[in-house]
Amino acid sequence: MNLETNLCGIKLKNPTILASGILGVSKSLLKNVIENGAGAVTIKSISYEPRDGHKNPTILEFDSGMINAVGYSNPGLHGALDEFTDLKDLNAPVFASVIGKEPEDFTKVIEGLGNLDFSAIEIPLSCPHTPGFGTLAGQDSPEKTLEITKAVVKAAKVPVFVKLSPNTKNIGEVAMAAEKGGASGITAVNTLGPGMIINIEAAKPVMGFKIGGLSGPAIKPIAVRCVYDVYGSVKIPIIGVGGITTGKDAIEMVMAGATAIGIGSGVNYRGNDVFTKICNEMKDWIEKNNYNSLEEIRGIVHE
Ligand SMILES: Cc1cc2nc3c(=O)[nH]c(=O)nc-3n(C[C@H](O)[C@H](O)[C@H](O)COP(=O)(O)O)c2cc1C
Image (cartoon, rainbow, N blue to C red; front, side):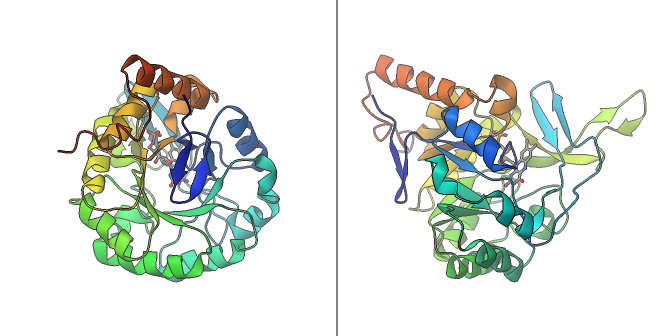
């Protein structure tokens, strides 16, 4: 059986997508992830100016997930222009992830990237641990989401995905604002939190930035519920992200309403070939349970 997926006109050989911030810092790493089975890949988020990010430690594993406060370290627009050339060579869609605080921060980067071969642009309005970006700045409000989405859609030549936060009172309303602003799809969700882990011997928070966003298995039920809520609120397709490490997790996301599946922490738990593993497990599950395609189960839990 084949898992080919049409994501608002973008053809994917399967629905798995590398989530932003994990391995997507260079063209050679993107190539490696595609060779390991990803249907599409997202680059690590880039801002107009380079950013150093937060001080170490920035990423830790805990019992049931991961916590990170990388702080959007990235080489800026000019670094991205040098790195992500000739993306057509990779033979799979590559999504740019662009961050900013105000609409013009996003549009400056998007206009600058205009000649590169990105198949879509994702805009995270949802980071829980980088002041000015995302939820700490109220970017998750429907009003701000509408304002930023409209500006980005106007500047972009390719489909725009708005990446939402689970840390919001009503994710459906925020998704509706993104749809109204012209987004082609929703990515749900970014990390949960912020959270804190304390080293009790040192009597100090462990993370360099004290707080961080949670990802991995700990957040899966919240991510699934967010995708469920978004599916019930908008018509545009959803990339479901958060805690997906197995084919069964991916099936759960599709049942909640996802068209494609983002995988971030899963790379840490199962290796770079997590994409091939998840696709094989999805196919096995679909066949064993007498379904024929992902379409048949998409959104199936909605009455
Ligand atoms: C180390 C790390 C760095 C991340 N950096 C970014 C980023 O730059 N931009 C972004 O939109 N999301 C970023 N994320 C969030 C992931 O893309 C994803 O939304 C989140 O981790 C939930 O998915 P997961 O449970 O599969 O990891 C990052 C996550 C981790 C763990």
